[in-house]
Image (cartoon, rainbow, N blue to C red; front, top):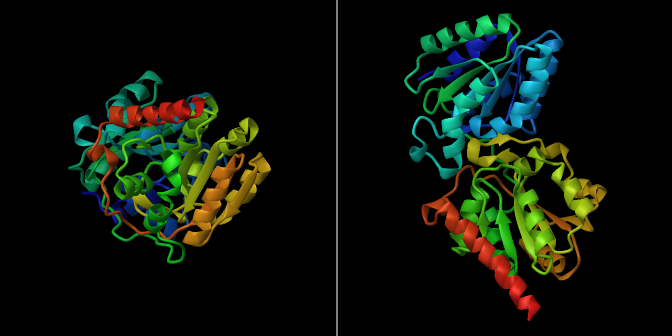
Length: 372
């Protein structure tokens, strides 16, 4: 195993003083140390991380990116049209979820796990792979090879298998705020008449654990896209209330979706953002939500109403009112970061096909009732 000290020291020795990224639990240790040292920028998404690193490189600083391969799609655009087009060399560390054995990881990682190396080959990007058994010396060898590509003006990926890097054992927790599980238990009866979409991470685990329902859409993977998924469903089933249970990190990742929601103005959409200030399921790294007023953004984007609810009673009341009146509505709920979850993923009890079909049946049932 490569220790956090060895990883960060290797970067420092090679002059990398700017690192941007989107958290992955595989890199929780290095991210924690780099953050303390003031060398880490938490980016909204993987593409933005690469673009920021490219800007820092052109400004004269050696730069790197830390990301998870599930977000490689977000990164492909600036990779192919910015760093490759303009010859900007950036070092990218990317974790390998769903590799080498897709069956050994969660279902949302299966496709990208087997495609990561092939995708990089397809767009002509060099890469090195660091296995789970790697040592600090192995990392050094991979970085030495990467240096050859960087010297030639090419970005290069160091692909890292699970277990290669030491993890960070302590999460940065927000002590104030409601308990998300308590809120979910309180609002479960209010959600009975709605089609519910829950974001990736602990929210989906806890919603399934609290309700046990098989007709909610528990989104595993596709971080940041719960609101867009809910928007599409709401626009095509206008008689069905659609509630999206989002997270602050996910909402920030594709914040532009709020503009799409405001412009399309579906009257049947309610968007709830649980804000705990952390990427909770990837190691508790801080998001940038402390600098983002979600309610103000939603109002500016065209949501009919937007509010912040700070008690369980306020959340229940706000959700009830939102479901009773034309939207779209946003409800921001500050919650405490729990650090871990006692609940299992929905896919421990259902297949992804079951989740899709259960949600589709819920939409059909609600529309059918309204047509009678």
